[in-house]
Amino acid sequence: MVAIVASANYLVQFPLNDWLTLGALTYPVAFFVTDVANRRYGPGAARKVVYSGFVPGLLISIWLSSPRIAFASGSAFLIAQLLDVAIFNHLRQRVWWQPPLISTVFSSVVDTAWFFVIAFVGTGMPWVTLAVGDYFFKVGFALLLLLPWRIIVAHGKTWRNPA
Image 1 (cartoon, rainbow, N blue to C red):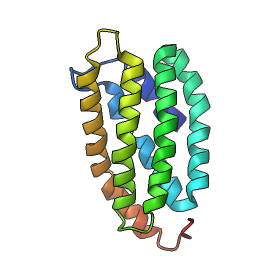
Image 2 (image 1 turned 180 degrees about the horizontal axis):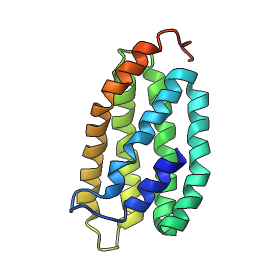
Image 3 (image 1 turned 120 degrees about the horizontal axis):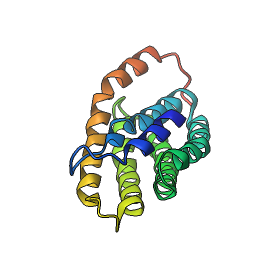
């Protein structure tokens, strides 16, 4: 989780175009990692994964990027990931694809809006288009991750169902 957060925070400084930064290519995996932990071990363990990635990710991000980006990312990460855990847990009994997809779609809205407003308003970066592109990339990536998610769920039938 630390590597995901730190790399995304460093790479977000490099736009690919007006709609996407390099950071968008790595960050969506954070939701997947949190959801796997939630599915396998329950919401308490998933929150521990979030907290364990937060502090080191924030410190590394300050070193790799800027304090503004590190603060924006750290706070967006913490809020969005904890929201993801709560939504996923609420939906855990639904059809296999709904908990990870729905929790990611909603928590990504919060993550994207919070991050881009704090990190880039007033900097000259085209933050609105970058936020829109980032959000849709996260949703697209979440859809792609449904294939490995399905495999994980199918092989995890013997997992206890923590609630």
